[in-house]
Image (cartoon, rainbow, N blue to C red; front, side, top):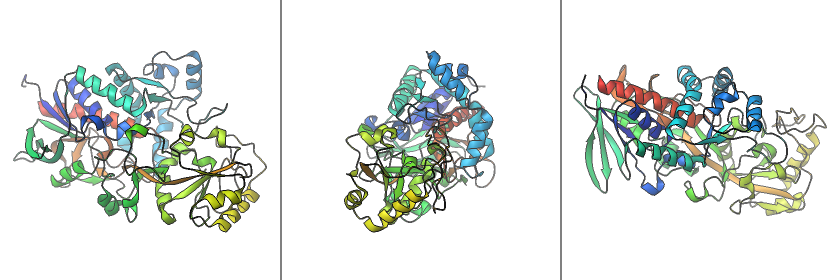
Length: 495
């Protein structure tokens, strides 16, 4: 065995790529990270996340390995919110319609806590995420399994991982776009062809890890795979995730996997920009939809706003909204639930209209059929039950009667002024279809076996998510699979 350090090339500088780089360095490799974005826009989609992580844990001690200095109150709350591996795995299966790859999902679940503990030792900072999702005095359990978040959110996570890479001597090259794989006569990945400052060149390596995201920032690819109208969606994250890595791998004979017509897509401010805005990272999200009535331009409800906790439904809302007239709808609230709305509804960047009466509100909602909207709300109010007691911290079963679509939980009459309506459209986060990988992150070949020397992690991996998504699992899966891919890549390079 050679004493020369093997060289691992990581394409993509988000959470998955940087985690893979750190793990490969820990395993004794020389590592280079290629980041398409310039320095000022580094971090991929991870930079735009809220930094919430879903992990399996049974005791506060497991969280204390990741979050230092937990208070006694925090430990007590965490103890009440235990989220074991069986529960995490069942949620993974349930929200994906039991289609997710059970081996991949199982690995993410089983290695989630250990991976974050390792990241904490490498210098990633985490804090407890308790009571962050709703105002007032009630504890909100609606974002179950997500009791940890990165200190400083997505930007803090990327800053911590980059600092860890710099301490480990990992080279990060910015403004460099990977456009193809370099392969040897046997078909093995031996480097990457890149374009930077108008010039192309090859960078040789002993193994390549693709961690360069999905195709959500390319309108043409969205329309091709997701369907008509998806070119009109707004992109929540980076403008650089246009599917380059997927195209490179397919040219090399890779196999695809997963839900190519599906994507993580949320309710997003109708007036937000076309791409993510790092200066105003989360002010355009609209995640209190479960307390609203969703009204389209025809003045009708079209969805059960509260069929489950929002952490299990928010990522499928964008598709439903995109199918409405004008690719938009309104989230309508009254004064009773206003104190419970998340902070992003109160920023100066939030688009909304207001009225002291429902008639005044309807007149202010541009393009809405006013008469039909008033009939819709009247029918809803008449279907609201008297019991059980409204409780936003649990699935309270307070459901409408004889209404289609129903509201399955948290149904309160819309009758207390002032009334507010927030216009929302579809904000796409990432695409679900991607590369088929084996358990260690190796990229499967469309012919047979795997493509030697080629690995993948992060959003480019297919087979984990179908139709929907559980909050916080994306960062976790990126890190778990990134760490596994790094170990396999270094072992291959040495062998």
